[in-house]
Image 1 (cartoon, rainbow, N blue to C red):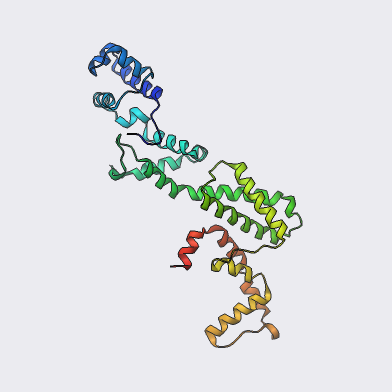
Image 2: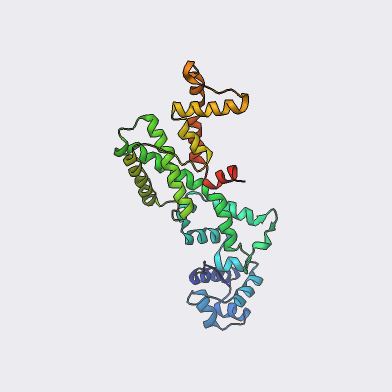
Length: 287
């Protein structure tokens, strides 16, 4: 009846003991009320064996506690334990509000989201996964962005890069690492060494090429590359001019100011390039 997260029999035993103590009764009387012999209830309370669902349901009825509480503690503890089990312990530790947000999603106002309720009245693991997938990407993005910035700043391989080139390298490396993270799903919050390894690989490849070329799969990357070159920028201005006015643009007799204005968009485009996922760009340009 349980999913990936299994009840801890020692913790279940401690919760049973808490109820016994609150009722101020002996093991014998506690067992009697549940239709159990003293050795049996004692084995549950001491955590030697996991109390079965029929016993927990009886204790829940006489104590006013939920079945889920006996097996997993408070709902926040249950959500946090599940996320920790799936490798997200560091994120939960530093961002406890994520657990609260998932709980709030489960309790829509005064009512449970009953379609996602499991056998013990707590949110299904699939529900937690879905909610976490909505809340966690922005946290992971900031975490990886911070590491990328630190590694770019201190990289010996990029020591000959100008400030402008380092800014471009930051956008390029960040997006390359994020692309891998999103596609592979192999990197979790707190895995600093793994992220540093990905960043260093990207920096090494970039240093070998000596030139930054952004992916041109979508328009944003294409524009970033075009606006780094005066001739290519003039061509795109001419194409736009022909479409809008029927007249071509030529920089032969001036027009440098217009080229510079177009190229002034490049930093903002690089920022956009680094912030948007491939899925978001797909939605922009492929629908």
